[in-house]
Image (cartoon, rainbow, N blue to C red; front, side):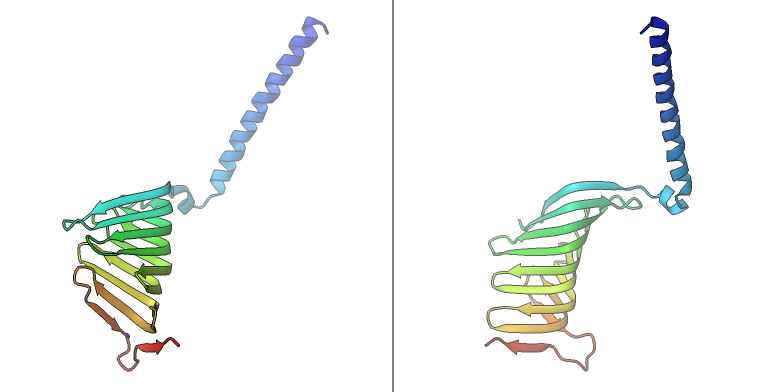
Length: 187
């Protein structure tokens, strides 16, 4: 192959490469132009393998883990979590484990809302529900939506279980005062 043909061939390849790159840029611009205004404005911060640990004044520890977290762009103290597991290590007492599909965690005050397939385990007690509002500052855990509480002896169905984390005082009730909490003894 002569030098002229080789140079011509190299120029041809380089030209093809530049044309390909220009075509890719226009294709990306076309795709961006086809996005809705909402899709253009929205961007997110995704975090994989999220882990937060906090401790209250009494020495109780709160550890929350999630497969993924997304920082709320309008309030950076809020993180939306997926596949959540929380561990509450009560000072000189037994631990409480909470699992859920989703969570909303406030990094400033550690308040957490768990939702979808919520499971709370404490000693021989298990609570299933669809929603749990946990607050260290309020010392409260409010469990609601399809609440089913089971232990070694009983199965209880209610609309809401409210628990004071510090005192362990618990209220179990139905929203409709005409309905009653359903308690069934295991056989």
